[in-house]
Image (cartoon, rainbow, N blue to C red; front, side, top):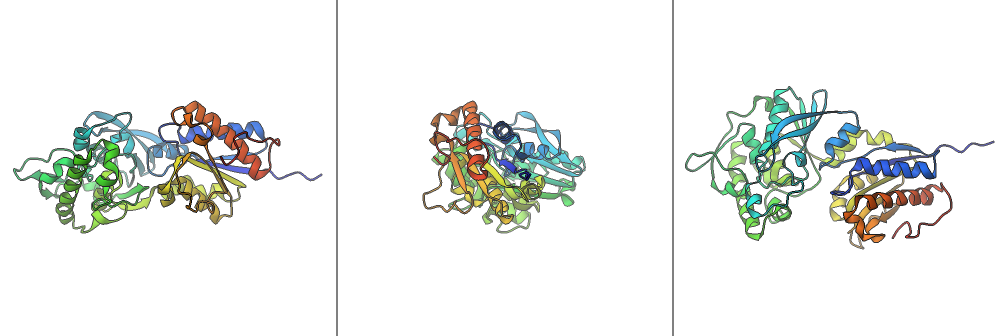
Length: 391
């Protein structure tokens, strides 16, 4: 008697931001598949692309949790959660100076700082870290990383010789920069800048123009922040002998924090690629029968290398089919996602209330996982999802 080979499915979603974590999505998918087809083998691979959830992704891959002293975007003391493995460390910017549940206005957008990220990096350097990855998504600040530079010893002063006030709006007053007292550990550390955008720090599509409104800035504040970043770029790039860094694609990530990392000798990398390497995604996907990925919103930004698209591209190199479960799909009708995703289930087309209801989202994700397994592997009972596999 012939025994059918065990089918293996890789579950590799990113978070549904603000609704459900990647780890919980994996758990929901795995439970749904086990209920329908208990013999199916499941590989769990919750992923991240440099935003919030990055430390959790590292912990799922065997890194250990740690914490270091820091402060949030407006100066309140916090404990920054980091992931450690030997001499390597990951700092999640969103957990240090992110928005969280806060809804700032223009005055808070003006003063939000990355100083706490610099505190976290300094603490890790003091502890002998040899490689530090900054997961750059989700910052509340648009200060060009000047807060981080200050915490690491860069002396930035105004024309009266006073230390520069925190935040991007103060940058037009920057007059002098001295780097003699930078943390000595920066000389030997490898600094990895993991981001999921290709925005430069300055220009018509710079950090302030593209992202500051999401952080509470109105039109006037966007102009002030943009002017501050442009002014600071000239002075700091001269001080760090790094001309042109502010116009490099990706330098605008996290309100220009990536640019400050470049001044310190950091290396920009796609956040998704960083974490797929860290998680050993290639080994998990090789030989699988199907990959299920997903994220809260599939849009044009996703095509620039966010986690689900990067997963699909990696799977394609191994000849493995990828399907996606997404909260919403905002790709233009002409976007060619067919080559990447063999199928897509869009939850808000089934029930729009899922955007504000984590439990409903999880129920729909479970239903979608069962539907996709049946449709693409021919496993499970012959039933039809009432909303269809591709709403």
